[in-house]
Image 1 (cartoon, rainbow, N blue to C red):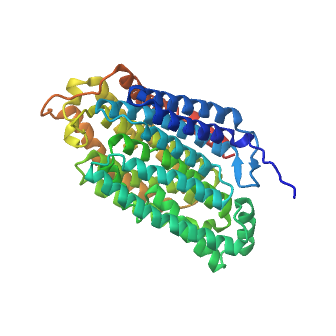
Image 2: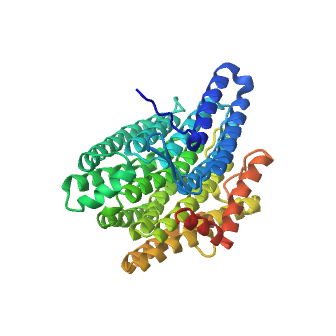
Image 3: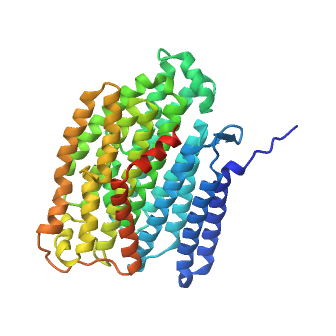
Length: 478
C-alpha cells in the first residue's frame, strides 16, 4: 500500500503553535508559581512567532494539503494574523488583570493558545469535517476559560449555559454537515460547491443542510435568535476572559461563514441571503434596543456585539466580492474596537472591584483626561460616528447592500444605528459630565497604559486613513 506524505509547509504556523502550546503546558506544570510569568512570556513569544510565520507562509495562490482538507490562501493568512494580534493584546490585558488579583495561572494562556489553534484550523478549512474539528477545538477551550474561576457561582453558571447551548449548536451544525454530505457526496468544499450548483435550490436535503449549518454559524457569532448565551457569558466570565471571547472567535466565525456559505454553498446564495436578512434585522433590532436598558457595561457590550453581527451580515447578504470584503473590513474593525473597550474595563478594574457598571466611568474625564479621550475614541467608533473607524465599516457594508438594490435594508440598518447612538453616548456623558462617587482608578503599570493607548490610537489612525485596511481586504478576497 502506498502512503502519500502530505506537504506540511502550508500548515507550518499551526504546527508551530501546537508544539509551543504543548511546551507552554509542560513548563507551566513543572515550573510552579515562582516562574508563572514565564508561561505568559512563552505564550507571547509563541503568538508573535506564529504571526510572523503566517505572513511568511501565505502563498500568492491558494494551496491545498492534507488530502484537500486544508487550504492556505490570502483570506486565511489575513484572518490568522488578525486573530494572533488580538491574542497578543488579550494575553497582555489578562496578565495585568489576574496578576493584580493574585490569580495568575498558566491555564488561561494554555487554553488561549489551543483556542487560537482551533481558530486557525477553522479559517483554513477546505472540508466540512475540518470546519467541525476547528470549531470544537476553539469552543471547548472557551468553555473551560469561562469556568476558570471555580469559586464563582456566576462564572460556573455562565460556563454551563455556554457549554449546553454550544453543544446544541454544534449538534445542529453536524447534522447540517451530514445532510450536505448526503446531497453532494463529499465533505470537501471545493467539491461541494460545483455539486450544489448542479443540484440547485430545489434539492430539499441540500437546503435543509444549509439551514442547520447556518444555525451553527449564527450561534458562534451570537446572532438573534441564537444569542441567548452572549449577555450571560459576557457578564459571568472574568473581564479578561470576556475580552478574549468577544474578539478573536468572532473573526474565526466570519472565516467559517466565508468557507461554508461562500466557498461551499455560494450556488444557494439566493436562499442564504434571505435567511441572513432576517437574522440581520432581528440582531440589529434586539441588540440596539435592549442595550439601552443595560446598566452593566459588559452586558451592554454584549448586546452591542449582537447588533454589530447584524451589520456584519449586510456585506454577506450582498453576495458580491465587494460585499465579502466589506464584511471582512467590518469584523476586523469591530474586533479592534471591542478589544479596546474591554481593555478599558480591565484598566479601570482592580482587586475586589470590577469596573463593570456604567457608573464606574463617572469622573474619568476630570481625573484621567487621556484615558477619557481613549474611551471617547472607542465609544464614538463603536457608535459609527464619522470620521471614526466604525463609521467607515458601516459605510462599507451599507454601500454594498445599496449596490444590489436593497436600499430598504440599508435604511433599516441606519435607523437602528441611530438608536444605538444613545447607549454609547451615555458612556461618554458619564466620562465627561458626571462626578465620580470616589477615586477613579486606572490599572497599574506604564505598559498597560501604552498597550491600551496603542489599541485606541490604531483605531483613530485607521479611521483617518481607512483605505489601507479596506484595500487589503479587497486584495485578500480578490
